[in-house]
Image 1 (cartoon, rainbow, N blue to C red):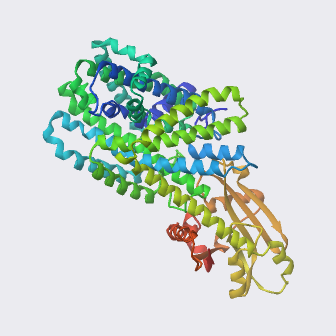
Image 2 (image 1 turned 30 degrees about the vertical axis):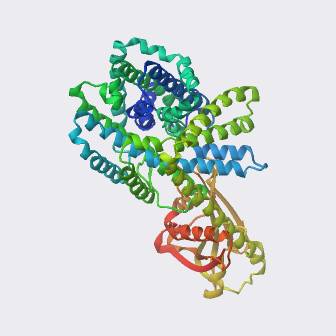
Image 3 (image 1 turned 60 degrees about the vertical axis):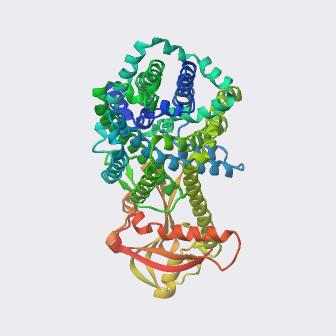
Length: 627
């Protein structure tokens, strides 16, 4: 299957190079800036910098990158795509589709919680990345330490303010800057390896195994720091639809992976000769004159890394809204050419407040390192489970193919996740609290929507019953077309009944219209519209969108012309029901869920704005629904 992001018109070699450079700028920023803090976090001051520990730590890092990133994500998981798209939601709908007809509610819950964990990662990644880069100022001179927090906050504010402009205008710079970044860190590591080439023996996995075997308790705790080396691996899979498998795989195997290994092993070589450099082994790799330029380059790289995670949060929110897991929000496309580039103002503001609070509260990358990891490893574990379900049931892979491989994946994921659970009291509770809050909001929204839909369906009148009972002279027919937005086209919308009851009229042509989001990334124009005609000049229109698309009612109405069903917007009125959701007066545990759903309903974007309905053609009719 060709990659979704591969246009057929461009020459293949040129296209591949361009996509590879773009992938470097968007996909690898997070994992590419991990050397800033990973090795330092593995030597937290509680242990002496012995040669055996250096070899063991580097061995664990090298094999974590190999097993988790190279084999699991780059080689295996990229085969589990939803029409070329990857990511936790794409994988979740594939697993749900594969288990259709079976009890699969827990698959949905697992996918939603994995997505919720991503928001915890989206808070910590900008904080720890930018803060660890700016902390390089302390390496140059301790006198600059008081400026670290203010400068970090300034960079973060600039970063979040710039989101409204989108990444499209500066996206062309991201790739070349990250190429420079990986080249510099690779060269710095290579120069140090040349001084202590014996460090390459750490490629032997036995060093990592021996380190854990000598002290299993301390070794297990150490895994909570080693996992920082693979943070950002989820982005490789999530951005597959934007760049395709080939460019992402090629960039990793030929450039990113080697440069990361060189830098990690360079830091290890430095610690062999200069154990005191453990305070910040990354910046100590550079000569004194290069520290400030390296701080500038690292700050730029971390801003790019943070940009990728923030954009991922926007994309995830967009998908959640389209699939009905979160209330409607304002979503702006920031590029005319790239579908995946979206900006969600509400999420951007919330992230800015929470990230700034995080920096002020934790105040150092070391403290953030203790909190970092739970969200990442939790999402990785959920991804492994969902991928196993899809590849086994949906793709029909044999158990003898899956079990050995996924047993290793799950063992590694659970080991990392368990090690990070030990850090709950040191700050690990923080991303978990964010994830639980997001997951609770999703579940409350889904529960409330289900209750409201069930109540409306139970009290609704079938459309064919209304048509059969209409009299030719009553109610009075008025010229024009009335479009009634409804969740179900087989039942009469409440707005239509209100119009007949209060205005005593019925339009000459009446259209019941519903918008459905289906479990594919995009829907072809040929499959977009489904039209049915009934007696009495009644019609139903079903408009389908993929979970990566944004509804556009005027454009959909224009597509109806292909089927000979024309609309004149100047003669068309859109009737939208605006029901007030209220909670029934009763006690019990369900009451807080009711209140949360009502709160989310009040925050939801108006349907008219969300569906881009012309404001001068809207008629709103209100009502009340109790849950």
